[in-house]
Image 1 (cartoon, each protein chain N blue to C red):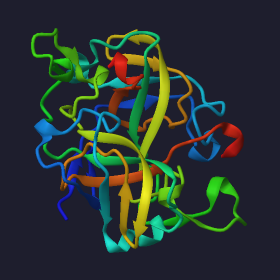
Image 2 (image 1 turned 90 degrees about the vertical axis):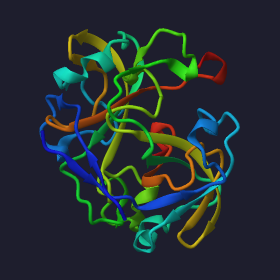
Image 3 (image 1 turned 60 degrees about the horizontal axis):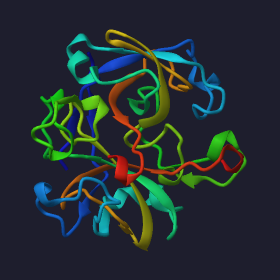
Image 4 (image 1 turned 180 degrees about the horizontal axis):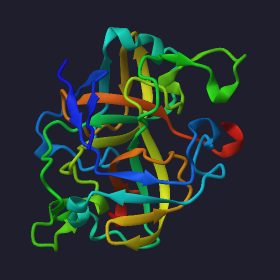
Length: 136
Length: 136
């Protein structure tokens, strides 16, 4: 099957260095972090505002891609579960979804809340969180 | 910057053929569709159940990747908006996020509700919708 070329648009700059010590999800105590975008992405970022709720999409570059079953949430004695029923980073395409709030904007650097991705994680997309149909 | 190789794990089988006629979002009248996974992905799918709410992640292979600003929701006379503030498929990495419910499972074929992706769209990941912290 044809493959596709994912080109990072920026990187996470975070105090989180070690994936083993990162919270499992952003709302479980993850720190604020900077999203540092490539300068040529600036035009696409121009309508983001402080207070926006967005989904940051990352490529979890330190994950394993050859895993189809694993144990949930580090419960090493639990039954193994298919990765498509888990949020584990280990999966065939290790895409991360991170709902965050925009805290600060400084040119191509955007500070966001509660991001559990480690320092250096490639960013591949940013999308607004969708509200009710009538507000779209 | 290093790029990454996205390898589809399956494809959408849908009555929607023409992107121009597809609803903008799944909850705006999109039909049910089958997710047809590669046979080797079966192990990762084994814990999905009818009634599960999942996020299907696709690669919107017919989108344009060279667009950084566009008009929102086909309002061709509206001001152009940066793509990272829009859900438009046209963006540097055309990743689609589709919240759906599992309706039927038949081996590596999984039927889901309200999918606005057109027939043939590559699937790259499936993740469970996260509930409250205490249920994880």
